[in-house]
Length: 539
Ligand code: N01
Image (cartoon, rainbow, N blue to C red; front, top):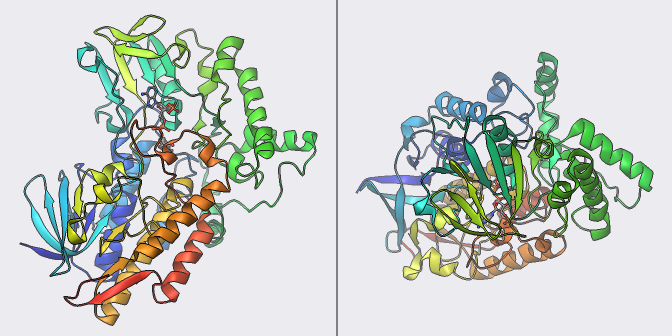
């Protein structure tokens, strides 16, 4: 069986940097596997109309290479999916990564051989390889959630999931389209599909609080200013709660008078747009229900101002969860789209979907005839893709069994019982609530440092202890309980997948406290991990 030092699964932001780090910085023999026929991960699969980044381009990118930072030109504040994909393809070419990746290859199993302290990895195509390290870069929002609505097989039209969009695109001109789901994806797709379709029905279960993007093209001056200030921009991001380069505000929403607060929200809504509304306004929007109400009320007033039909406006107003407790979407003319004659909102809380028929979707109110259905219904988040691989650690323990009551990790990076397996952006990591590329870089560099330490010390295997894992699980829950996040039925909790154990999965204590803790653990000789020397069993 061929032997390598590390297998990395996935070739998105995480997989590309991990391969580069291990191969080019540490001189290891690496093998990457990727299901798609190209790099890109999320940005390879999510090609739906309107797909673009919700984070600003100048920080939603790698910082590890200042040459890369200086040479790449982002066209706009929020680049569209094809541009981000081109960026990742450029990175793969620039660092010569494609030669280390086998594309169109699904990893099906990974088993830890305790005697040799090596992982045996198999793919659907029949490849078998052994590796000292098994590293998951499969992504936390990559296993599509297709709801089990009866009748999907009967539908005579076409249907699509936004997370597996046809590469050649879809032309909805003249078609009657139904779109299910009003998360970040549905909110991005709705205005674009409405421009093409003869009629668009948006099937909404939970209304969302969306903030306008206020996108703009970057001028040469914008580019220059950013490139000249990259070290400072990155520094601010690294010191921040969310990994965003927004100056930390220590002001409570309740410190301002109603008039000042309104002015502040209005400026963020009308001029800045995007995540600054939540991460650059007041520190306590996600901590104090009264503070949160001020923002939620402001957004509801905006919806009522924008949407002309008061009944539709009211249906679009979220009332059952605090602002930001579900991942806050960012839009371009989402609410305005409901003023179009060819767009109808269907409130499926009021009139639930009963079945998909040959002709369309039937709710308790009646049948909607459709030519196409778009499922913008999200993902089996954080655990879905990893659990599709049959992963077996020490003593025959499978990851599926280990995680049957919810995922457990130490620092989001390792799982007790699974030596030499690392997870990038897994459960227990702050990544889904923070600037994703920055979190990925932090994870990759921490893993790289740990592996270097093992090489220097002649150690063969590293494994998180059960106690450290339990302690981290408690910290993750404590951090969540100090916020309003648990008050929503979100994918953070697994609430979007029927039957999935409800456990709050991401670490919401902040990027900076998290990365400090990771450093401290390493500085203290990898506290909470046990190492074993060649051939010996960890634990
Ligand atoms: O998925 P979601 P998404 N019947 O799970 C509804 C990232 N992202 O693809 O809220 C009817 O948020 C569901 O309803 P409810 C970002 O992190 C990033 O939109 O569960 N409806 C909801 O409205 C984001 O958070 C970018 O009641 C059903 C929707 O489908 C994450 O991806 C861009 C249903 C799913 O919303 C996921 O976003 C886009 C059913 N059976 C996304 N099941 C960037 O810019 C689900 N729904 C980086």
